[in-house]
Image (cartoon, rainbow, N blue to C red; front, side, top):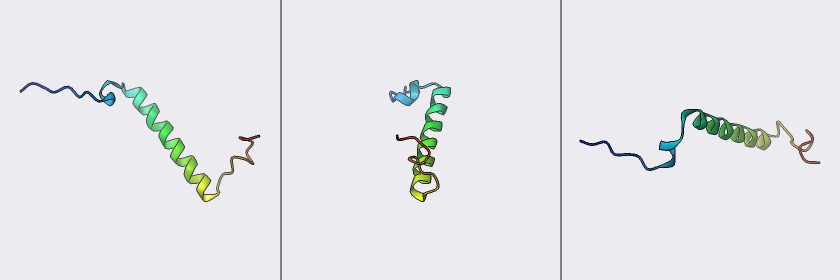
Length: 49
């Protein structure tokens, strides 16, 4: 039985790029959680001036 090639973009993405993408996604989720809980305030940290 011949193998079927996966036409989705993740099939062409190399492993290091996929890891970087997961790291960025994790950072964004963590930032949203910290912001929602009030643990970290981006304005007081000087991000928006």
